[in-house]
Length: 268
Image (cartoon, rainbow, N blue to C red):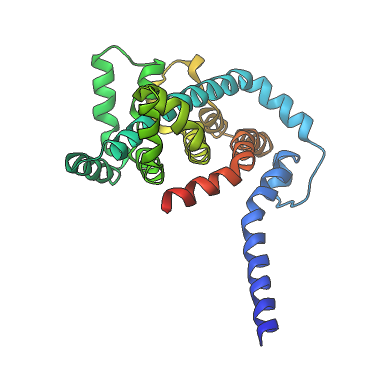
């Protein structure tokens, strides 16, 4: 009976895995096939990868889009790590009931969809003459309730006796944070970096609204441009989606162990 149960479990997991992997396989095959082959439903690799890449580079500024996406995502991730970790650290280490109320208010803000505040944000940045600037792109995403909560939960496992000992040794609060707290919370930082980088890289709506110059194009914008037109080259489109997917996949696979440890540590 136990053996039959294990077999059924493995069969179920294999089927679910195939359904999960199929979109990736379809994308890989599409990037190497012609548009007609994709429309015809061809599900195995072809020999049109180079031609698709040449067409993509010819019609779209791929290098600029990659540069802008990497620049925006890396800068936003680094700044967000500093701001959100300091906020989470302060909420827990300098704990009081008023901070609990403020944290509850921040968590309530998570229920508001971004589309509901996008127009007021745009009007505010427009009045401040900040449209098409990096600051306008970054400010709405620098501090998020999710990351603050993540660092706050992780800070609960941080030993307060260690902070007291560091203060007795003459370290100030800034030194305690950067020299003791950050090295101790590496897994939490890895999880937060993964979430922030993937969110910033895949963000389409806000950059499309606030970054209006052609020189500010990002990879999600480039992929959206491939859909505009009377005839869609699906081979070029699939290649664009594949190139857009690779950086986030690499970041996740490189940090997946630390990501899992950071999420588990925050839950505890």
